[in-house]
Each structure stands twice: as structure tokens, then as C-alpha cells.
Image (cartoon, rainbow, N blue to C red):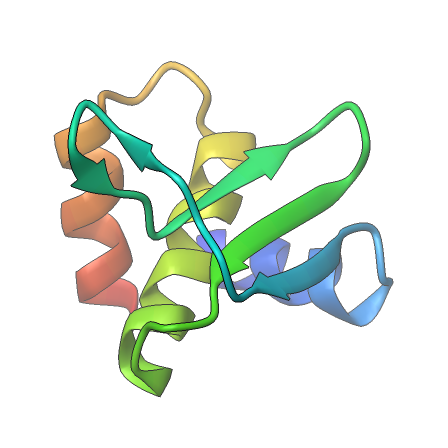
Length: 82
């Protein structure tokens, strides 16, 4: 079910995915990506490996699909889905 929702978001172009070369840090930790649901944009750190980019895209879509999930559940589910 989650995979089908992510595929729908991607195939219908509901979100624009942008890869950003210079990315900021949060509390000293490099940010891999984030979602701007109001603008329908997902920003991804371009310096990540292909695997990390895909996991991060899944991660950001999970935030949209399950906004009440805690960060650790989103991250572990992203890795499992990858």
C-alpha cells in the first residue's frame, strides 16, 4: 500500500523532486532532504549516493503519507522499503 502511494505521487507528478548541491545543516547534522508539502516539492541533497537519494525520497514521501509517524519509524521503514 505504501509503495503504491509513493508510485502514484511520482507517476502523477504530484511532487517535484529537486536535487540541491549546497544543503544546510540542522544542529550540526547534514540534512539529506526535506519535503515542502505546501509547495509540492521534495528537496534532496545532491551529494548523497544514489542509494541514499532513493532512501531519502522514500523517507520524505513517508512523512507525507504518515505525518504522525516518529522520525525513527520513518527512517527504518524507508530502509526496509528500499
